Image (cartoon, rainbow, N blue to C red; front, side, top):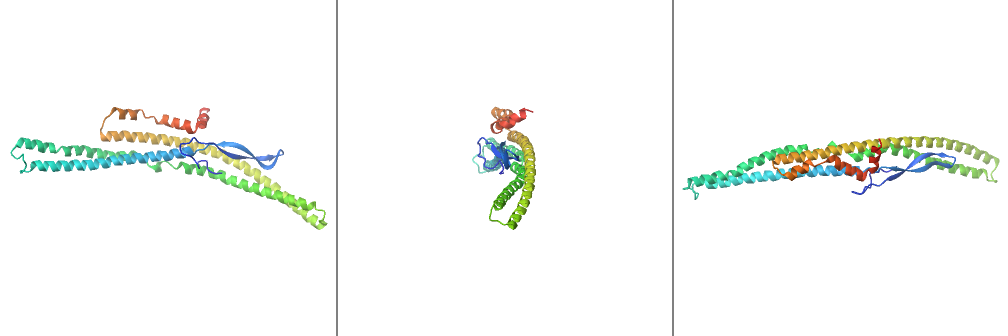
Length: 298
């Protein structure tokens, strides 16, 4: 069975993946197995959620870096500006050479670029620390890989079951061919004896293969139950990771504002109103309403 996360359309409401549940045969169902439709949760939105979270981290990292680059260039420009104009007004050939107090006023004010640069240099250093607050992609293990790994055991036993069923069908075809030969009136006693011997051998093989199918069926059911437990655990851990990620992004933006040392009510209010738990609830209600109902029943 293919992993449920394959084929997810971004932003689409996840579909339910139906898969076969193999049950042992009964007198009413002469085939080796019967197919019962069950629903399997499509976890691909969770994989996409992690991808989006990683993109958000990278964007924030780039956002902080660009501000640092801007500050670095601005600081250098301010220093160059102060150097240029201080030098211009300090020269004895200046038109202010005879206006001492006026000259000192211009020289003094020309140093404002250096003072502004000091503040920017401090902010520039602070932003370097801000960048380190952003979690790395390696901090959160690949959700898709975890889901694929959880599915491996199911795929393995299901592959065995399919192979056993295929062999059982072939044995039954062989038995039918032998029975046809036994019903052939043109066959002699030697041939009849040979066909009877082969029939006994094939019938024994059929019984053995039925046992194999029954055992593999039980292993499939057990593997499916374990898979369900594992994927639910992976999903719940993924939401803990996303909550941690969103909190870290908020903390980074708060440190970003502090580093810039700018105050604005709307910016502070946006940070204070940030509610990652509520955001995750809305996301979960959109993509996994059944899991919410399941959780609420316990």
